[in-house]
Length: 118
Image (cartoon, rainbow, N blue to C red):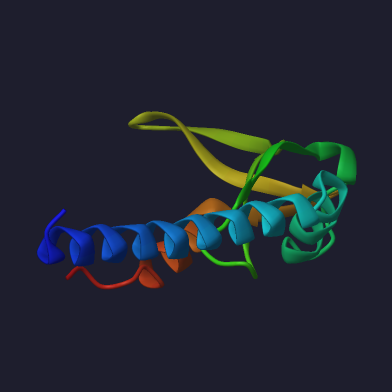
């Protein structure tokens, strides 16, 4: 084997080792976060207003580093619809018992806080 191919092969193996180590660390991070912890974390992020049984964790995946994880979840919510000239429109969401929030305010906040386009 020539010297050039040996160097390329060693560099490729080194990159594979680094990538494999990062993936393994990510897998461990994902395994360290339990579904119950993720459920509690989402509940807290939503202001503690949702009952835990309204938050369903589908799966916990490894993140991009050893200190994060990706959580796929479903959050059950109750929506109020109002008939307008354009038809039925979702206008409010209930965050807790008798705690209705206007959807236009929430969606406006989400749109205003989106990262800029590259």
